[in-house]
Image 1 (tube, helix red, strand yellow):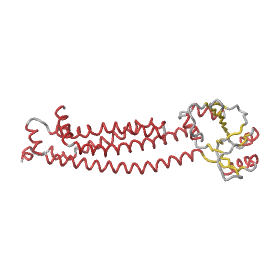
Image 2 (cartoon, one colour; image 1 turned 45 degrees about the vertical axis):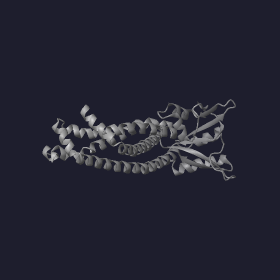
Image 3 (tube, helix red, strand yellow; image 1 turned 120 degrees about the vertical axis):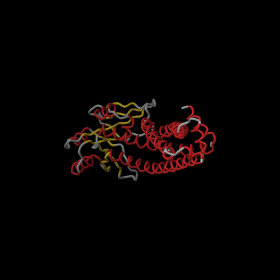
Image 4 (tube, one colour; image 1 turned 180 degrees about the horizontal axis):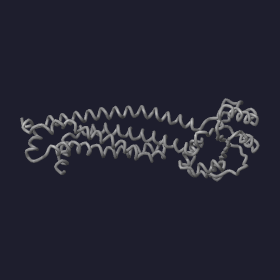
Length: 324
């Protein structure tokens, strides 16, 4: 094993510039691969956790003002009477949320009791679930509490959960319109909005993965060619090694070991760099990093095995042909 290691190390030292160039190319490809795949898996995981917590039948009540060009969720009084009327529609539940910023700098987010239990007790990350519901950029110091059952508040967010077919939707909007005055309402499926972000992540991931894979394919072809040329250039030297007691397996493994000695430190550096990028983008997605590193390791294993290809003929070639 020591002999194999010495062969690999000498080849690395003899071609430092070529090794550094290969390392840079492979490092760039691995960093992109790990980063993009981690973000994609993170988005998919968060949506899967959302579906596990809320299902696919949760709708945000969007409130729009007619008097201004500004649209979005406007403060609206969800009275007990309005909530009772909405919940009288077949199999419909209504949740509301009240956000309060106190003078002491503390912020309190109060949710309907059933919604509160789902958010706090769910398997998904609490802050990610709240982000899917529309509460983005909350600090972790925000206190999440449960609203009293009959609470009425001027709220920015409200949700309806249930099977909303066209007829049910029309009934719900009519009830809201009766209490809304000059406001008008729109029901938006929360999962649908989240699915759009997943589709965007898929599209971007696909573009970057194609780019990354093309770099890796070019690198693999270049590495395979370099190994073949090195073998052809040093056939007589290998024959001398064989005469001195080395085996063909030692020589073949030295090329595998050379690639591993270069690629494994690069994978470590790429993982560290990717973790910083992913953490900056979305801290919760870092937990997907082990899976993407495993995928990158499998790619490197395939590349390592490829470097054996030029030696299939070498193993069956008589020693005398190398000396000639």
